[in-house]
Length: 120
Image (cartoon, one colour):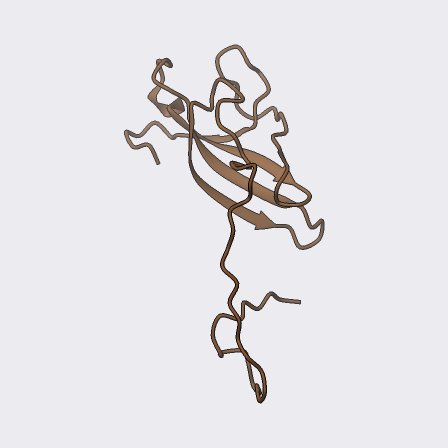
């Protein structure tokens, strides 16, 4: 099974008598769906990437969290964190045991910097 986005005629083989009607997107009212500052390592949220797992149907979200300037190690200024959802709107941030942050042993951080000087 695959998803087809009908914004052009690439996948349409026959369309006699049909009419294309585009519906504009609307912003979800209780935005943002993933909030910053829930934890000390989330001073701000940068980029996000989301994927829906084909077997479980769960939405898996990875996002860049800016941790602030208070840490001595530059490799922890930005981290990649994880959240998940059943409906793509209500996300939970499971506490994992990958990377501690200050005095928090369990976080949802799944990747930290490699010692370079970039924020990416």
